[in-house]
Image 1 (tube, rainbow, N blue to C red):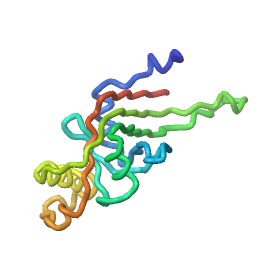
Image 2: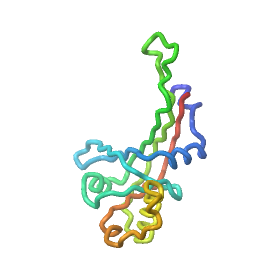
Image 3: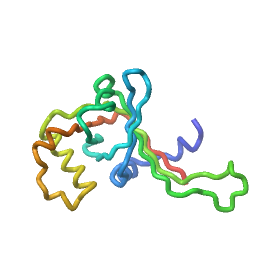
Image 4: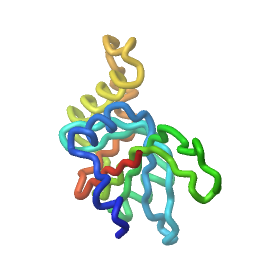
Length: 157
């Protein structure tokens, strides 16, 4: 492991702050044919888990049902560090990132599902948070919970 990957780790508080401000992360899973499948997802962080929603059928749902082991990645590029650099190989990036290893579950519990969807509404469309979620929409939406097994946050500046 390179030196900076050991020394440039985000604290738990910094990781949680990045989970709160990041709007999109990438869910990585393994398809039935053995190929990786990565898809961008809106998400929330709640009770040491990640929640996301989507259609109840499709590649990610099939992949999760076949193999619950997943990865989730978030990054934010803060700046390109190219000032006073003469050699293109010396350009670097100021960034924060998180890589999660976990186990994904399709949420079946109606209360957990509604709570997650309500928190998703609050994060992404706070002006609609006082609106009741229609039961039909709750029932027709898949909610995925990733139970975090390992989480590493890194930065460089």
